[in-house]
Length: 369
Image (tube, rainbow, N blue to C red):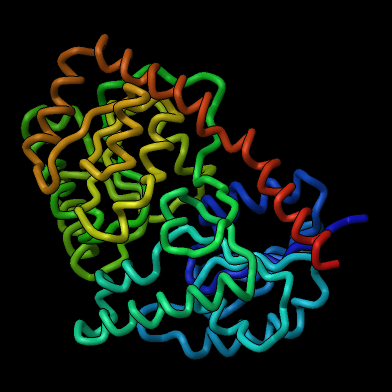
């Protein structure tokens, strides 16, 4: 019997790596039919048609513009939910829309901490952030009693009272990696002030000046706040960095190959402390030496793998020094890249974990059928 999954997001880019490149790809490879409901036109993308992957367009939830998306997704869940064996949802907005619809086969894929994230959302008025965070914590208790959860991080388990299966946020790890190069540093992922854009822009300026432009920072990802957009546009126009904007995984990952270093400059915020920065895993997967701020899981990964260095928060001088040290010692850079790649192959390869994700959904489908 062919299983059918309904995958829903109104927030994430339809080409989000975890959703599209890993989870949906694993389901299709496992013989499932997938209906993917996402804001395709909201991100200027065509809606996929045909089988085994069928797309449904939804409004995009962004900033304070969330009502239309919530209304549309509720109608979608009521219409399409009963026709699928499992519903996998990725956003708080979708969970709220599902209340009262009787969808026992709904699965919440938990790959962020919405309550902690509210503390840095510029669209949320500051006086309401604490209230919103407490309200969401209460709703999480309801959600875990009502639906099934999959966690992207073991650290997320502390937020919940019950035990939930962990499906780690990993990467597709190539069998081999390109040699570490000397012409570029990379950053991949969403860009915000909280993710260190101010430090990153200063690093780009310093590295350019110190190398007479021989090393450039390539930023691969969209800006998610006005300040980040302003800084990236200005630095790109000045020639301090190359800003690619969002790229699908199939286009973004090749830009990592052969890079001298990969940056993960997250600030010390509650939303990031229990999380493993996926970008660090992606750098290691491609044999790119990683430079990360001292968040607990990132530090642990660097210490266990030997695949990079840890720098203080908000310290562009330390980041620049690490980049230049690897430029001046290619042998050391190559050794760090090789260690990271080997560790990622052993511990973080989605090629091994993808089938476990599919098996988890199959188990859920069997329970509710």
